[in-house]
Image (cartoon, rainbow, N blue to C red; front, side):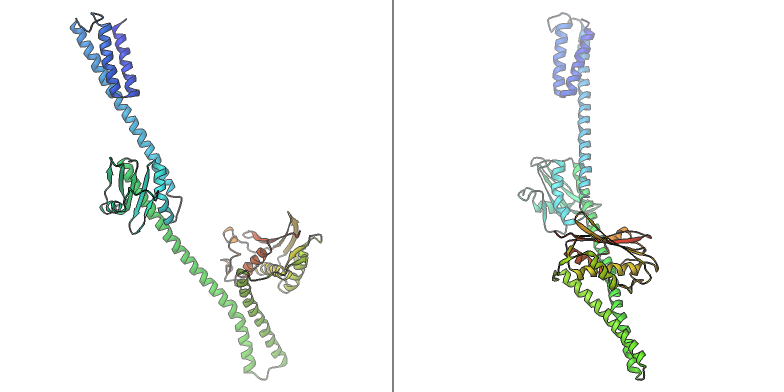
Length: 449
């Protein structure tokens, strides 16, 4: 065989061993290959003696080439392993950063962080200390290798410490030059770069969550103040209006003893109407309080929903003046177990709102149908409509539309009372609306069985 071909074959074998098993195995194979090459392929054959000095040069060159190639292959192998490790660490850091965004509650985040570190980086245990908080947050309460004193010391110094023998490491939670606490890990040691990145990510997450909480509290306080002001203005106006009418009428009667009987009767009628309005407002507030406390007893009897619709139409007849009402209420609807007075009050509220918020002359449509063992009653108007955000709020106590709260009188209790009454009957109430096209308020009642 050609010695050159054999040498190159041995050299390929050395490279393969170096690539898959490492430098030490490759050096051993290189030495064995050199001895075999000398014994079998360099004269005199069958001995380790080398007769020709040129063969010495060839043999040394082969050994040197094998060793250098082995070293280069091992270096490339080490760099590949290191690159894969860095890629995995970056992937873990990315996954960890995504987990930090799962909550905006600071106490919850602090309790979850050690478990995130353990799950994401495959270590045995983790502990977290945050400056200004007395507790140490641990992935496992029974693990005490990560002492509180050591965590506080690392947070104060602002420098990471690594104990390779004890498989412990500590990193400060840095936010710029400021130390916000410390992280301790046992049962595994990430690279120093990963450890520092963990500390920075955790510090940023804590700062972010705290800022979000502060912003949320400030926004909630601002909205609460706006709502309180709107409620106070609305209730004050609603109570003051009838009181003003009563006061003006009484003052006129006291100031002039020579009033005509017709004038006196008119003033007394004003007093009577305004007193009724005032009584209605007080009654609404009292009814809402009773419904909230579940202190209202329903007097349920079998009735057709058409009876409640007819009764409600009679009560709001004057307020519906100028609005043609279209009724679509089949006579074959099943009987329902309901409190007739309270369901009538729900319909009165929906009809009054339809008349109040619709332009003059626009029609109001009242329908009822039986569907899926429920009777659905709807009141449709041609008002300004309600946007998607407000549709979820209109049934809250004291809430009034942001565009209508100062234009149309009201306390914001009517729909809240209607919802409480329907809920007490085991039904549901809701609204579908399109801005500029009107709204459809509906409620469902279960069919009696």
